Image (tube, rainbow, N blue to C red; front, side, top):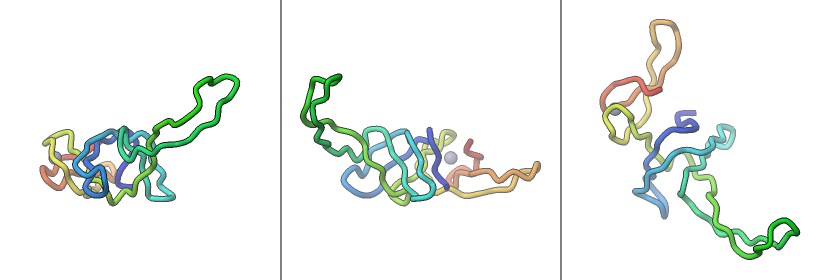
Length: 103
Ligand SMILES: [Zn+2]
């Protein structure tokens, strides 16, 4: 998948459009990611013995990977991800704006 855990991304569609955040989890099978502070949903919880507070908690829900752009750490701009084969045969992600390899 083009976006991985710990990437910084910019949200480009949906209710959180324009927000930036770090990818907390990636779900390659579903082509979805969970981004810190993005797509917060309210979840109702029941009181448990250990957790006194019942009610509503907010947590992130996964979003589609097409809804984000990668923030390049080199040029600091949002970019689509490209690929380049390195000299050692590894496939590396590259920033389409500045052409640098994105680790
Ligand atoms: Zn760049």
